[in-house]
Length: 287
Image 1 (spheres, helix red, strand yellow):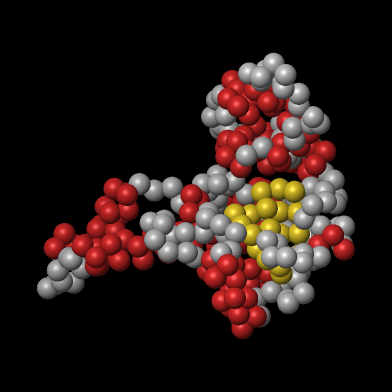
Image 2 (cartoon, one colour):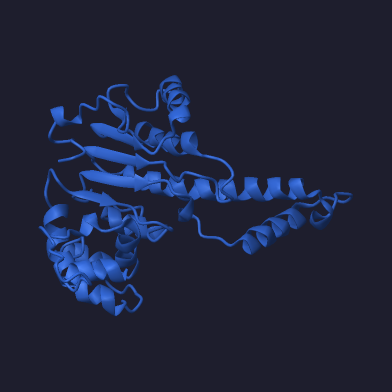
């Protein structure tokens, strides 16, 4: 954080350092952008603007006291971020890590205060979305205790108590329980972006692990794209899948096509040779 702050305010430890061009909000590391959103500095015009309809979505919200480092850079970030977000072609937004905007907050982000009111799509045309194991914040102790509690509540007479189960069986129960919780969080993210009218959707699956980190959930994460069809919403013109391992791409391609999840001409593995996205400047990943 201190390094990023130094870059933004021009107080770099290297006296010969020269920053070339603006240090834009969307070029900040994801963790820093996440902190800015988590602190609700968006109540002014970080990424949201000052229009009354937008400002009212956050009226009455409590928020943490921002760290002074963020306050020092926030004025410049607001000005630079606003020009990016409200550009019809070049705006790129992202969903923060850790469930910052969950539940009813998604409806505010989408432009409506509650699910029963008609949505007003936000001015977001390019969206970076990571299905990340960090979206589910839980300690190992809580995982163990939560699974034990659920097991004990459903235990029938004669069942073996949780503490007496073999270690690997206990671990399987913990894994299955929190894998389901992880996918539930990701489904909430997918339900949000399926309400948007996007030109470009980037899905980063580089950290799409289960909460225990023992297996990959790439097919499950990409599978949520089916919500576009189920909700009768238009697919983005281009869907880019980032972070898939080489040995995963073949099975993932088969998974997508067997289930008709995404039209064949609309999804791409951007780290494979021969990307042709520059042929369409409206959806180019480098625009």
